[in-house]
Image 1 (tube, helix red, strand yellow):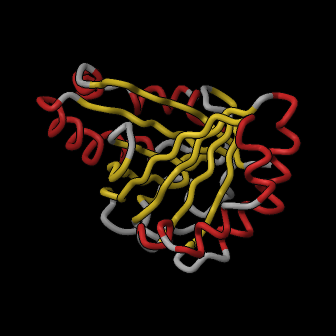
Image 2 (image 1 turned 90 degrees about the horizontal axis):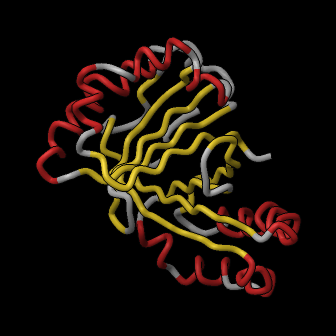
Image 3 (image 1 turned 90 degrees about the vertical axis):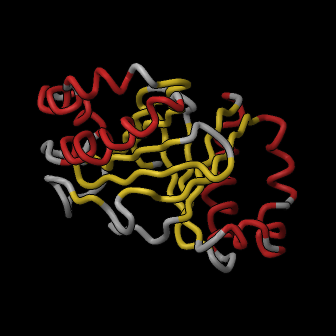
Length: 211
């Protein structure tokens, strides 16, 4: 795996149960192929939640915001099939710029293995706790999590449009890695406890690749 761009966005969705089959067919058969044909779109990966919500999440890497704002993008997404399903899904979109590492991925203990899970934390932070939060995440938290067996790689982002402000991703060999004793030990330190006091609007979801 590799990081293809520092500019990304995620789309989360909840879908009416009777429309889920159509939603997944539309995403796989039309929406993803259409967007990947748009100039500046580098990758699109879909996930489904095993813990937390929203249920569906798509992660897109793009060269720049111009790829999203261009005419080619509008043509790709404004289709009859898209319009038909729109009333039956609730969607939220947030754009991010990667802040750690500056380029690429922070490689983990299981680097090179197949991605079977993804932990995403999205958090707003109080202004007075923001510097300490970022220092903790970069200097202790993500390196410690990446050292856990089953952690493949990690990266962090700051929102450029939408919320929450910060997003951290850890790619896992299996969704259950984040529930192991080794993970809990790495994640719960005195610095962690102090940083959590500055959390606001936390959104934590464990995903697996879809399908």
